[in-house]
Image (cartoon, rainbow, N blue to C red; front, side, top):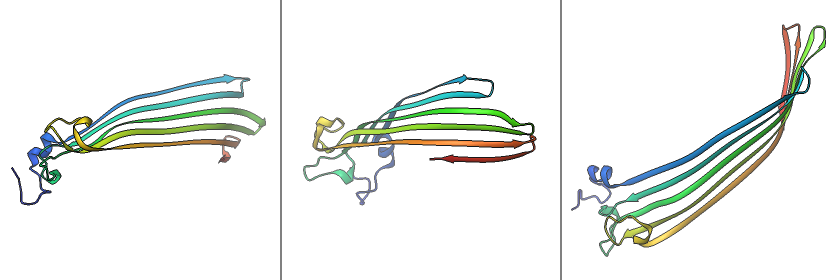
Length: 178
């Protein structure tokens, strides 16, 4: 039965207990780092970070929702059933030095390079009007649509930092990233 004379006003109990809005996530985050000291003042290091996400979305406007009823008295929508995968990889290589140049002047310096790769891919389906009321599957809709999305980005950069320290009192620093 109709809750209101306005098709877009839905019974609150029906909204809370029948609408489906599920998101599931599986995620792996990892990192590893290594450092090698050539001397007591010169070193090299490498760092790697990786983040991988798999998301599953399932959203349904259920059978019986008044604003979705068609002329054949079918209703409901499979708003989204999709899987998305996101990856992010970040690699740093650094050479660093901490050395006394003169009696009262010390240098702390790093020079590094970075590679970052980001990828996103999503595939999904949706549909309108469920044939069998209450059965929310892709094969139970009158009409359906598909979606696919992909994006990828790769960034290469270099950076530096030089700190000149005079008598452990005054520091002059410069940094940059390209």
